[in-house]
Amino acid sequence: MVKQHLKRIAMPNTWQIKRKGITFITRPKPGAHKLSAGMSFESLLKYILCITTTKKECKAIMHDKNVLIDGVVRTCHRYMTGILDVISFPKIKKHYRVILNNNAKIGVIEINEKDAGIKPCRIKKKTILKNNKVQLNLSGGRTIIIKKDSYKTGDTIMISLPKQEIKDHIPLETGAFILLSGGKHAGAMGKVTGIEGKNIKLKTADKKDIETLKKYAFAIGKDKPLIKIQ
Image (tube, rainbow, N blue to C red; front, side, top):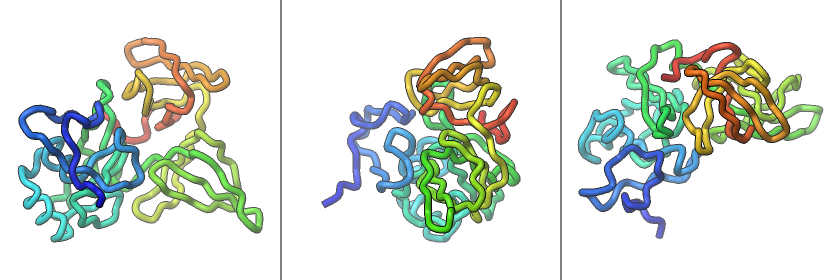
């Protein structure tokens, strides 16, 4: 039987939730994000957004179809909600994006309706299909089939929500603005100053030079972020 709970002492370090006082917390269903990059929607609603205080309240909101995640109605309180996902409450016209802050903790920021219709997705790999078509395998578990391939693994595409139409392409190259999604510098942002093999160098807004693995780099803009990220 699959457990629906998780001991707080075993929570990922990215969850900014108190470990003491209460033994358990809701375990998210397996989804598009790793456990360290997301949490159940119930936990996000209770401890990060601070909109509800009980599981019953969370379930009531979701069962009334008052919640959109990436433009799709979700009704399960254990739905895995992760970094860069968009949470919308249509009835009150509020939109939020899940982020990784400077302390490498999962948080949320309020965004406008325009930003809520766009999501950056990193190209994890590409698959060749029949008739010379190419499938882009994206972060967040998405796939998009394209006819003309001008993309590289590691690049980012901006897609519309919920239709998943490609709106922009951000190459991972020198000068790109990136977010680090892992490693000891997770949550840091800055401009790429160099790429050497599997490593990448960037300079943050406070002029700090960082070198880390290229796989942690998530391009979110060409000179500056194309979406609100902090």
